[in-house]
Length: 117
Length: 115
Image (tube, rainbow over all chains, first blue to last red):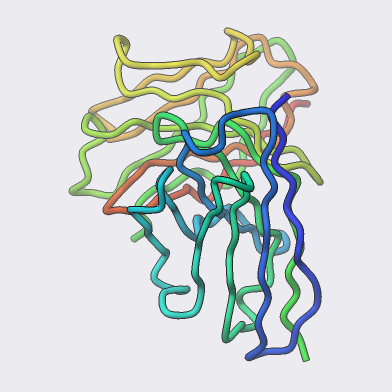
């Protein structure tokens, strides 16, 4: 069974940092591109970042460029999101998602990041 | 103007059909893009429904009933998610998505009420 399990969320002050992790199982992680997608409380979905299967291609939404860094460790079947200089507007549930055919066929349950003083 | 625009809400009766639209911004040709659709119920992550580019290039998500289908309306520059034989369990938020300019872009979502 394909599983994606996020961790690392929590309460952080503005300007602080967090590192999210996504542990994958049940499929050949190294064969898939992966993304982070977030959802602010009561709001819609917002794509955050993309990383290709071997990390050669990376993209970010403009609002996180220079602050967030996506990475992966295929040997550990894990995806990461390093988030620095966090802002109130980064408060959201962060989902990792497996990409296939340009869409996301599997999603984790999400991890909540709250940025507040 | 947003890249993808969805009506914020839609109501329909059990057993009826619901047509959810996803309108692309002027200048972005719907015929060029694959549109992906997701369903999200409260407290749960999104679930993949299907992708649609054309009648010859489409794919249903694993386990997704055939009463969920995709199409396009070129005259309206829109993608369409059609749900037939509505059931109470179809009540959810629905999001469309395209890959545009090296980014995934989601529509704002449509809340479907089945009553």
